[in-house]
Image (cartoon, rainbow, N blue to C red; front, side, top):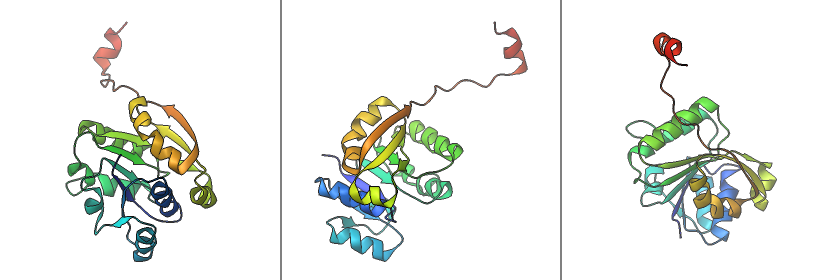
Length: 180
């Protein structure tokens, strides 16, 4: 069974983490709100001292944060989680963020040997509490297959929007004119 770190326990993330616990998944949590942490701990999660502590030993990291700048701060840079996670860790970001940040985070994850899914949700706080969210997932089919049991614990509809496009080398004036 996957060991899960859940980062971001707000109005959406808190109930999502609880639904994972209800399905028997071990969940370590972190949030800046002591109240949110206490609620998640009362439901059976392990309250961590930091995001890095929550992610220590996790095979899956799920985040639900307010904006792209928070997602980038969590994962990127020298102190970001990507520098600490073991290769093969599955990262699922459920935040609704801008496409540019989502791509940058996913590209960095891939470069570091991590599987990444961009999985924003629809369904609101009632759907989060009821476990009936809709996930619109971007990322590799293999990562989605691994994530499916977790997503099904939190939602009822899972749509695979797309796998990432293969990287193409930048085109220069020379290559554009010589290519046929």
